[in-house]
Length: 210
Image (cartoon, rainbow, N blue to C red):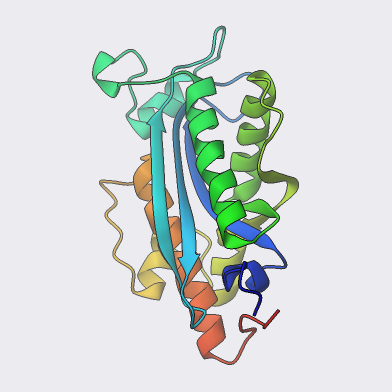
């Protein structure tokens, strides 16, 4: 194996999977507010076992003119006007998150990040839209490809709802903590790593040598 590349650089065709969960003010990435952003960068040991790594989390200030649906706030329990949230501007939240991801991509020997999320097209759409709105040119994520854990869980466990998939996988899931970007991101990272590792144990693709 190349000395400047870690095992994870060979496992996903040079892509570094980064688990993301967002809480938003609605379903329209162009008009609705981004309210919470969580990201977890998985790590792979020398034997090819994947585990959750560095965690990033930000409460995010709605951008100027953002739409926020009451139904979304009722669902998540977020109060965007609460000063105790310690919310930061989108530019800062995305800037710091992308900086950490770019560093991890470089240190792992990968060439780009790929977003992992539950119903991933939703999160990727909001991330891309926010990056464009903030005029961030170096978005580390692949612009349209992603790993969707709803699909993976449907294949592995016959469940597409995150809570039910975790239950089927033997991963503890607290419904009272759900719909927080940080908690859901942690559980998505756990089940993604579980599926990748279980596939390997069953004789699936290992981390090939360089």
